[in-house]
Amino acid sequence: MSDNKAKRILWVFRQAPYGNSLSREALDFALAAGVFDQDVGMVFIGDGVWQLLDRQDSRAIAFKNHQKLLSALSLYDITDIYVDQVAITDRQIVPHQLSLKAHIVSDTEITQLFESADVLLNF
Image 1 (cartoon, rainbow, N blue to C red):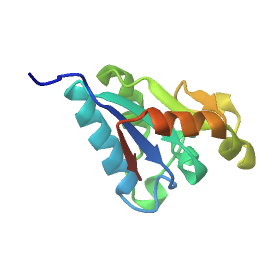
Image 2: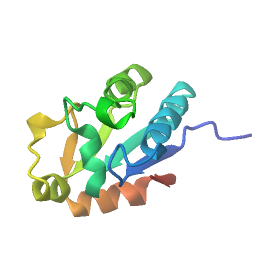
Image 3: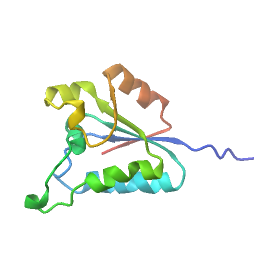
C-alpha cells in the first residue's frame, strides 16, 4: 500500500526577480505543484525578498512582472509564504511594502522550515 500523503515542498527564493528567468520559472513550477495538491511553501531570503516588493515596473528591462503570478498563489492553495526578517531589514523593506501577506521569520525559524520540508528547491 502506498502513502499518498502530499510531500512538503519548500521553494527557496534567493535571487532578485529580474536578473534572469529563473525566478519566474520557479513561480510557474510552484503553481504547477499546487495544482497537483502538493504541500507547497515558499521562503524568500537574501535578494529573493525583492520579488515580493509591491508595485514593481519591469517594462524598462523587458521582463514580465511577477506580481500577477504572486497574486495567484492563494488560488492554488499556496499560502505558506515566509520572508527572512534579516533580509528585509538589511534592505530597508517594511512588511507593508510586500505584495503578499507573508510570515516574517527569524533565521532560527527558517532553519526549522528547512528541516521540516521533504524537498527543498533553491532558486
